[in-house]
Image 1 (tube, rainbow, N blue to C red):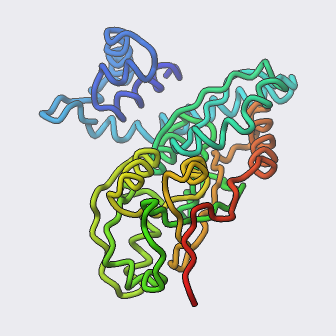
Image 2 (image 1 turned 45 degrees about the vertical axis):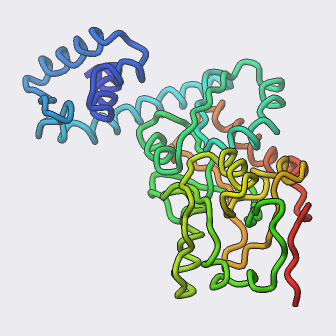
Length: 312
């Protein structure tokens, strides 16, 4: 079974659609269909059936899937081993990141990396935390930058690279109040929240649950922190976000800031990658550069601007 056919098979299995799979592997739809037919002919059985919701794996397809993933992983490791022997620090490294990290944190060190290593091509894919882990496991990306959500699959390695303060952002005209210094008081406020599955949303919901307090009313659920900041500035409500993501809006005075009274007041930014017997030299360079790049990058000023302080 040629790795090219297995890669296409896994793309179809993930997307359950020839058109979307073709976009993922950069082939014409007819080529994807031909490759699946070739693989089915080689194995002597159908791997997919059509249903109302799209293509479904047959029992044979389900049986093949983990072996296809393992075979592709071994092929990648073999390539990495050869590159390591030849000391070839070149090729392509695909980075996955949350949108906020990609737009604010990566530009702080990626240009310097590209200047130092012009033979390494970098690609960046934006996704949510859950999708990033899935893309790592399937080999779609080489390393993910996201916030720590706890334990990861044993096939993955994880390293913390920075600790980011969490804050409540408020409409700029909101007045300080001693009544908002605890979670019970915050429950009466309107909030703009990130979507379920986001680490900040998890910390937000968990804090109120642990305190035995009813969750605040959500005026909106939004996937973009930039949009959240604009909604807060317009007076829609308050929100829990990492400070670095809204540092510019705070500096311009578009939003105010309050300390977050929840038990977890920081979020760990981590990088996660697949464990291999031999890591590709290009990926090893990215991992090493990112470790120092995030640590040395100028972080958002942790002193509140237009901040609300709580009277004692």
